[in-house]
Amino acid sequence: MTAPAARQTAIPTAATAPTQSALLDRIRAALPELRKSERAVAEWVLAQPSEALHLSIAELALRVGVSQPTVARFAGALGYSGYKEFKLRLAQSLAAGIPYVHQDVGPGDALDVVAPKVFDRTIGALINVRNHLDPVQLKRAVGLLAKAHRIECYGVGNSGIVALDAQHKFFRFGVPTVSYVDVHMMGMAATVLRPGDTVVAISASGRTTDLLASVEIARETGADVIAITASGSALAKLASVALCADVPEDPDIYTPMISRLAHLAIIDVLCVGVALTLGPALVKRLERTKQTLRDKRIRLPEG
Image 1: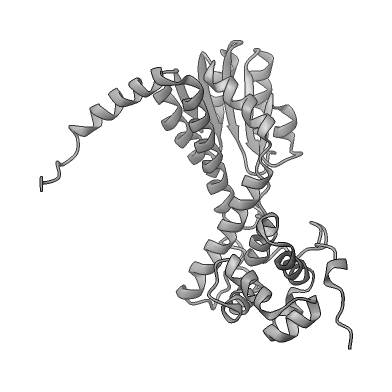
Image 2 (image 1 turned 135 degrees about the vertical axis):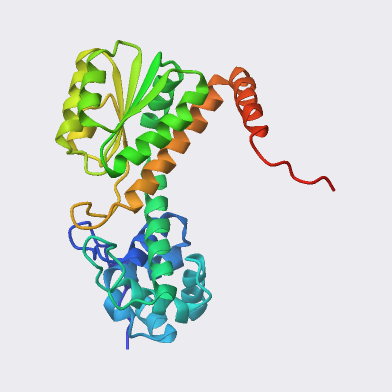
């Protein structure tokens, strides 16, 4: 019997791929880092995940047209001890989620199942954002922040937490920095911005009306806007620079957990980039900042 040619199987598109699986997202994110033969296994599983659940390692190898050790290496590349554990995690990952909580966790899941599901979804999403972050846009964003006269961070609801974190990091560069999570204050603050000021606007959906209104006002004053949001969103189109984080998480149905972590990671990347751009002078300033904290901590015993 001739095995089906897996290399002719297309990777599912956003329109056809299952959206309720953290592990499938993790596999998609890992595709560029897999060997050619391992990638063939990944593509077959992505195309037919439910069928893969019922195949032994020998059967899957035959369907794909690779060796059994290749299938084992594929599972190992994803961080699993072997094909058996991979199938178990795949079965758990394909389960339907609980609305308003997490899209991969089922109502009957035990805690030892919940942890792998949440971590798998998060790891896959972070790798995917890392692989698709536009280096040109990133360089432009770092340049704007490094020369900004003032930095304002805007976020509403869950994104407000990220805005607060951004303000906590950016003010250490010696630039006047403030965060606004109240939409009325945000709108008023945007009216007094000037050319040379930079706004960091964060939104998972990119369609929060009050945030969009504040960004429009900021652009009218001549300020630059760096958006951390979904690609193609209204916010991305309004911004001077868009850093896109396309996370398979519907904030209208589930608590925005993964998108928040992706946005926090992008903020960290921006901070490191700005620090490298500003150079030695910033290092001295950060050293003085750290010195003020040492006296507020309990000293560790010597020896």
